Amino acid sequence: MEGRKVTGWAARDSSAILSPYSFHLRKTGPEDVLFKVLYCGVDHSDLHQLKNEIHFTTYPLVAGHEVVGEVMEVGSEVKKFNIGDIVGVGCIVGSCGECWCCKTNKEQYCSKMVFTYNAINNDGSFTQGGFSSAMVVHQNYVVNIPENLAPEQAAPLLCAGVTAFSPLKQFIKSDEVIRAGILGLGGVGHLGVLIAKAMGHHVTVISSSDKKKHEALTDLGADCFLVSSNHDEMEKSLNSLDYILDTIPVSHQLQTYLPLLKVEGKIFIVGAAPEPLQFGASGLILGKKTISGSFIGSIEETQEILDFWVEKGLKTMIEVVKMDYVNKAFERMVKNDVRYRFVLDVAGSDLE
Image (tube, rainbow, N blue to C red; front, side, top):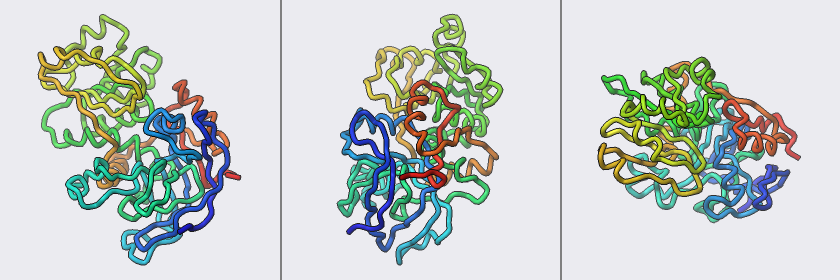
């Protein structure tokens, strides 16, 4: 059953050009939260989906999965939220609730997981994302934004932040100094540096050129900067890292980075490159090294990263823009011309 009419910015085809689009939300159910969208982060995977490069895109499509809003209405069985609360929604808005993944707070791996956009809800409705004036989401997939965290600062944490946090939290209680590598210094990468440093890790940023060296060391507080195209620097860094957080969202050679790992070192792949990644088996076997993937984080971990951000006094580095700038924002993002995350001021924009 249809609910209220809202306005978003949607792509009509794989050109991924966004323009105003009116549609109806599903009716607010007994366990649903209806909220006005305040801010929404802009993610590289949004563009992949809008261009029909991952999964199969159904158009018109309203993207956006780093959504912060103000609660306007709650269902009769909602106990976690009240009208006026500032809340967040990340990459998923549903799962089966019954499988092992759901029962162990790993619902993002549920086979019936429902994406925030370009998916079918359990009631048969089509999901549209946060590049819109409002959303309706089941309370189990909504998180609280802490009072001491500005909503625009919170937005990138709902995908990029928890994506970096989830694989790194295993090291929080380590008694040893962890030597970390952060591969790529974009939206996820810059948050990875901040998170790893806040956990006490010795952090090396790995990039293909030295263009971001100053900002990595000075603005983000990294300990070292490694240029992957510099053979001598790479040679000196062999067998030096406990892990590498690979945030690069385009095709690249994993073989270049495996030698940087210590014995039993790990590469965590979190960048959604649409093409296959390549590496040689011997590079893994001879060092007992591991390549693993990690997909966003659970709802529990999403709340954890928000609380962690406040506890550590961290600040997200963002550029806030209006909705009518979104197409230009995507152009600049592809050129890596943003430090480090665009956030759309949805509530402050004329969406019509």
